Amino acid sequence: MRHLKTSITFLSLIFYVLIINSASGIDQSWSIYPEKEGKFELKYPSSWITGDTFNESNEDGLKFYTDIQNKYQTNEIMQVGIGHRDAELVAPGMNLNTTLRLDSVLFIKKFKDELQNFSVLGEPNFNKYNINGHPSLYFEFSYVKSLVPKKGFFIASDINNSIFYILFEPDQSDFIKTLPIAKEIISSVKLHIQ
Image (cartoon, rainbow, N blue to C red; front, side, top):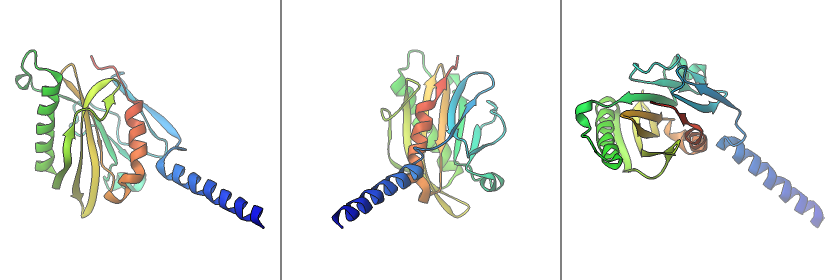
C-alpha cells in the first residue's frame, strides 16, 4: 500500500512538471523568422502567425499573433522592428548608456501619447538583457486596448544609430505564462545590422 501511495505521488509530480513545462513554452515547437535582407533573425512559436513580411519603413514593425482570430482582431502579441534615430538626437562621442537613456524617454513618451492608460511598471533597466551581445534598454508596462488590460515589455538595442526593438504585449492575464517564451525569443535574436 505504501508503495502505491509513493507511485501515485511520483506520477502526480511528473504530471505537474509536464503541465508547467507545457504552459511555459519549454516544450514549444519553434519556427525561424529570417528578415529578407539578412538584418536579423529570431525564433518564435510555430503556432504563431506573422503579419506581412518585415518592412523597415513600417513604423509598427513586424507583428506576431497567437492565432488567426487575434490577427483578424489586430491583437498582436509581439512586434519586432528597426527604427532609425534622427541624427540631431545623437551627439558625436555620446556613450551607449546615454543613448539608451535618451531612447527610454522618447519611447515612453511615444507610448503615453498613443496607448490608453499607458504606465511604466518600475524603472527602465539597462542591464537586464543583451540582444545578440548588445546592451539593451528594457522596461515593463501596462495599458488598455479595446477594454482589455495588457502587460508587456519593451526591449531595444542601439546598433550603428539603428534601434532594433521587440515590443511584447500579451493580455495581462497571460503575461506570466508567456514570459518564458519571450525570454527564449530574446535569446534567439541574431542581428546583422550595418
